[in-house]
Length: 127
Image (cartoon, rainbow, N blue to C red; front, side, top):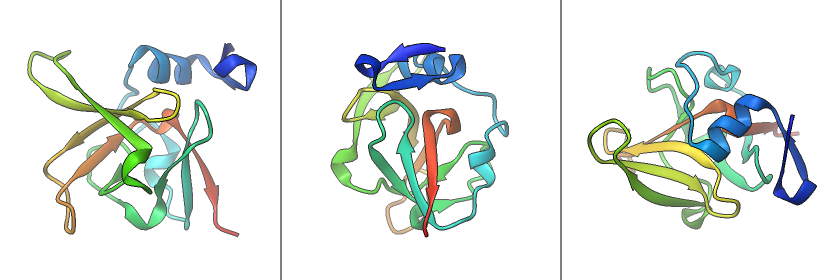
């Protein structure tokens, strides 16, 4: 395991690769892609609340998808050109952990698709 966050959390090798090295998990490999319970999705790197299950939908992409974050300032954005063209990368605003990307092909009301690596998240079901 890799130590992170000043010793506040432990990440698996896969979480470290995604959150700290901007990696991507293979599509359809995260159990959170099929998570249907009510609850909140948190940053696996620092525990910050990022997404509500109310905003999750099945995009068919193979990654957990949301049409908006829990709070607008929960995520930061950068432009990456890693695959030869511009994409909008999203990261946790608190710890900088790489989450995934946002695309303009999502459902109403926002028209956005936050395509998020499941390994970058933890989930707590609503009591």
